[in-house]
Image 1 (tube, one colour):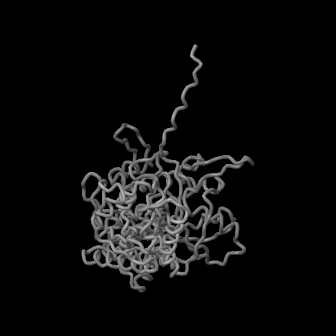
Image 2: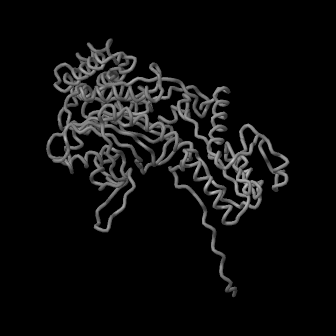
Image 3: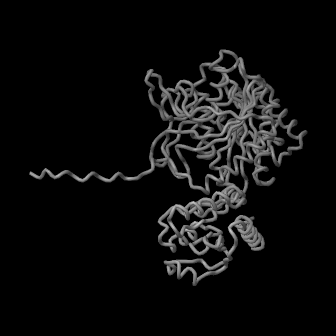
Amino acid sequence: MNDKQKKPQKLKARLPRGFVDRTAGDIRAVNEMTAKIREVYEHYGFDPLETPLFEYTDALGKFLPDSDRPNEGVFSLQDDDEQWMSLRYDLTAPLARHVAENFNEIQLPYRTYRAGYVFRNEKPGPGRFRQFMQFDADTVGAPGVQADAEMCMMMADTLEALGIKRGDYVIRVNNRKVLDGVLEAIGLGGDDKAGQRLNVLRAIDKLDKFGPEGVALLLGPGRKDESGDFTKGAGLDKEQIDKVLFFVGITDYAESAVRLAELVAGTARGGEGVEELNFIGALVTSAGYGPDRIKIAPSVVRGLEYYTGPVYEAELTFDVTNEKGEKVVFGSVGGGGRYDGLVSRFMGQPVPATGFSIGVSRLMTALKNLGKLGASEVIEPVLVTVMDGDVEAMGRYQKMTQELRAAGIRAEMFQGNWKKFGNQLKYADRRGCPVAIIQGGDERAEGVVQIKDLIEGKRLSGEIDDNASWREARVAQETAPEADLVAKVREILAAQAEDRKRAGGNV
């Protein structure tokens, strides 16, 4: 019998499904984007707030996809006190909990913005991740629809601050109350019809996915998909279906407003919703936001199960090429609405609230398509090379590096195997370093440094293995006193920036 111990198996490096690593370029792009969003929110008088990644599951459960399975859709764990906690599903439910918990200390209306990751325990797919970033703004304690109108204007200003020009976006506005009026008008009012109303809401929420024909089936007898799976419909008759589809199919509110008002006539909720839509339209028009920027559009059906009044969506209207090479309209990058019931769950009293959420990753993709991100170029660090490994020499190299950093110049001292000098220059080349600082024993004795312009000069590669071959291949470099190091590096970086500008690049 062989008692030889088995070699331990090497651990496989693998990323969990639905999650991604973020590289330096993406992180900088997000930082650039969120800084511009934050500036707009601050100008509107909103203040930042941060809530933890975890909340008690019952604080989130009602608004998850399947309310009868409160842990479905979230990542959950049971604490040592046997209470269930979940990673936050959105940024709105944590805000509602925060407001309720600190209600006596908060000044209403409470205007706040939050940015952070949210988590969905759902099946991942192309462009569909289990962790993604949202950037929200909300006003709690403002009952009037003027607060909703302001949110729409802030969304428009945010998109323009990010470089999206007018004509390439529109903020579309609807109202849940109008749909309630339509449902009441077709005989679906009352508590006994609550289940059927919910089925109607879920059906019209599939409008973008299945189109009017597919939604008509879901409103009626039901729909069978390509795999043969059957989804039971809401059981409406043809006349009822036609009225619902008329409402969600309105693209020109001015042309359809009269017919819509007639459809909801006699329903208190519907009439109130039409009034609110008209009020928002008048407010934004008075403030200079025409229908090319903010448009009343009953075809907005997002989140109607969740919202209680106005609903709005930011849509980008320009074409992009998808992975199949097809031209498609980019579509929604965020939205929101009035959710007067959310804080009230904790309070036992009405607390009005409205807000919107931007999908940061999706908006970043749009901005990259427009060439609006990465305009502020990141310059790679100046490399201080290492030619001698004794304490005195190392101290001099570190001192140079710190002097450059103190002057606001990105710099690093080579930290790899310094004995093969050619490897340091290969590293500088691959890293994209603009300048290399070189000081051997001779230079150190004279109190000077060699400053090599790596952009202007010849890129040094594998044939340079030692100090002698480096000295023979000197290109675009100069000798300067140590005291002039910072000034000379600044001069070279400025010249490189001017070259990029002349070449049509970004400084």
